[in-house]
Length: 477
Image 1 (cartoon, one colour):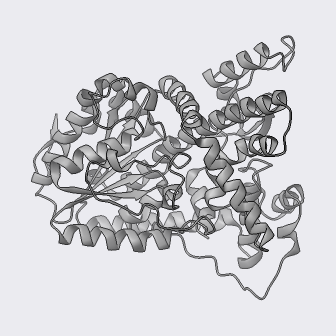
Image 2 (cartoon, rainbow, N blue to C red):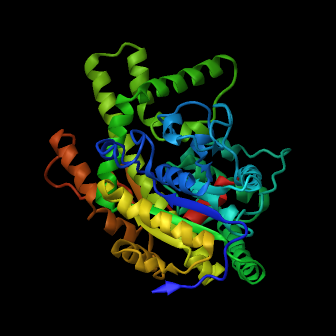
């Protein structure tokens, strides 16, 4: 089956979405498939392929890659892998800065898109931080700024996390149930919104959703949809194994040295009277928090046994965090972007294509070739296959993603083995049956860290975060 398009877009934008998951180890074993593939992730590789064929330029939409330097921990594409294609919004801000909020990013991204189009080239946006992508696709995707009276101070915002959570449960129990008890940043921000506005974060979010739906309907009437969205997707079991291997390769490639650089920067800043906010910016990059104890142990001359123990536990924690983040990114597309596309209308819904990157040995066949065909048809205004007809995986993913969400039963439960909190009964049930759980249990039993008998099943937190749309409200500070 095919769908008809009216005409070639006047202002085309190609957007590449998907979770973290570079496939470095697998791809590097097949260098003939992707030139310069030793370190670039599959989304960036696809962007370069499209840019090479269609006079494109690539725009980074990953918050961590805005920071200067640190190419390993931020997983930047190297100059060789860029293959001469212009890449924008990389290495823009110093380590001491917080990342751009969505308003700042939108300003720079739109300016860059205009410049690319003025040269007659195709802008290609590569999403890693999905709430950066939203305002470039949808009207009113940026939530209203929370007006803060800087003359007012609220001591509770500097209190221990458990005290802030108790207060949030009192004033906004709906939002309090959504956060992990140790997620200080989100708990603090939720409480801060209430204290400065008198409205709960959950109420503000509901108001925003109503307005966005109305704006989407109005926009669909007023302007054509001129975007093509390519979702690079791997089956979960393969992706988890790929991510674990990526972490190991990052460590052998110099990750520890970059963590040491960050640690030293933090210490030097403290000596100079500047205390870094560890809940924001580059300090939230996966790898720093997990490996800082190892770096500190090396610096302080701890025993070789203790250093090795901290290294192993840090890498394991990093793998857990990476898998969780990859799940969150895909959850964002399902729970946030697909509903927005649905609000926008059929043209938007039928612009999202799933490209199967599960088997990197077939990358050209299952990712590059169909993507090139779709971009050609998109730019020429030709009929395209319906997204569900692109592959069996595309059908499965999209049919599941567009099903109405099942009703969730709020209930916070903490898996002591995995050290993660689930916020619904349904998430908990999925958690204790998952592959991630079995992986953690197997490793911990092998290391004799937990009793073999009388142990509840547990899992990496795959569903523990809240609605990604609510998360975006808290990011826009």
